[in-house]
Image (tube, rainbow, N blue to C red; front, side, top):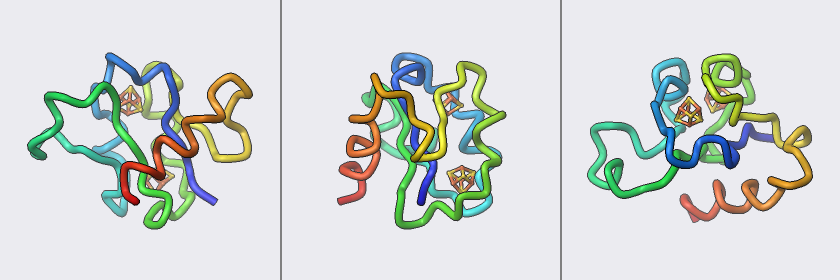
Length: 85
Ligand code: SF4
Ligand code: SF4
C-alpha cells in the first residue's frame, strides 16, 4: 500500500509533507526543476513505506492512505503513480 496526495493539494503544494517524509518519496521537492510548474506534489508508491507521517503534516488534508482515498478523488491513486512510471 501507499499514501496518496489528492485534489486539495492542487494549487497549494506548500511541501510540509516533503519535510516529514523519512524516505524522501514525495516529489517534486522545492529543489527540483519542475517544482514551479507542477500543480501538486506526488507520492512514489514504490518507495512509500506507509508510515503515515505526511498525513497530519498537510494543512489542507490532501493525503490519505490508499484505501481511504475519498471516492471523488480515486483517480489520484493513478495520478500519483504515473508521475513515477
Ligand atoms: S503538505 Fe499537503 S498541500 Fe502541501 S504539498 Fe504536501 S500534500 Fe500538498
Ligand atoms: S506515508 Fe510516510 S513514507 Fe509514505 S509518503 Fe507519507 S511520510 Fe513518506
